[in-house]
Length: 357
Image (cartoon, helix red, strand yellow):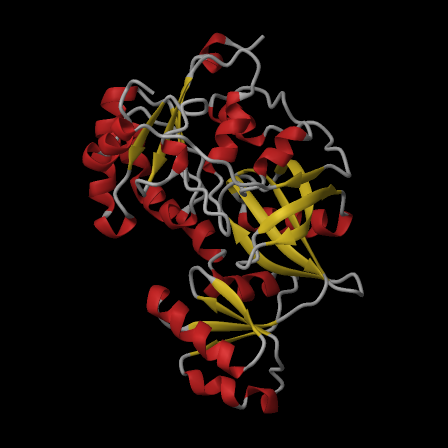
């Protein structure tokens, strides 16, 4: 049986979006929590767009609220959270989107003063895994990364092959977004598209051929990694996001992830993305500072990491972590969420779901 204080928690989860090519992890996190035996608490969905389906899915969330976009400023976010807290009495907040983590870190003392707990990395930890710093950090601790160069002019792509940069190449924003260019025309188009959204400079990486293997787990803030589940992508979207994957056990991936968590002293959930080439070498692609969109696969294999996060925050033993099974697949699919006009109008006008469900 669950302890009463655990079973009655009110939990807010962000990332209620479900774009087919790049879904957030919020709805998967909610599924993990909702399926815990005897859980009788409330789950509050938080999103940034009126069309985020998790805001309306009454079978998963008990209420839904819009948050101001990060560009609105941190005080706007804090004010909105204070309003929601007064109505819902949130105990724990689980951020699920990269773009909001830094603001949550800046505001964590204010959010804690509202009575809301979070499990977050420090600002320094977060910034070390930024795309513009990850290459140097990883190399300093002996973790390989693809060769990378910073580019500020699209003329680089016209003759880059003469300098050893052969197509296909990976073109990435310094904070978010990436694409694979097969030729100079595609590279220039990606350069301008990403720069228009995320600014300069642009990062260019040599493409590593092989299998993409991912790991998710929880860092305790002291260098230890708990509840690891590993997955190899079987199918991807146009943005490179997993559409299907299979659980694996990969000692090399685990060793590299443990090295990263130890060096960072990472606190909270994370996803480590690596490429394993044909020679068995591992190259770090990215560290995501939150649960991945495939986190329900971890729960299905015995490691309910979102619930373990709550146990960490409540200073309870991590009772739900097991040795994950190998050979379990997930296959993503799109599902229609039916929304009444009254609920949609309420979300559009007031930023919250009408109470009738």
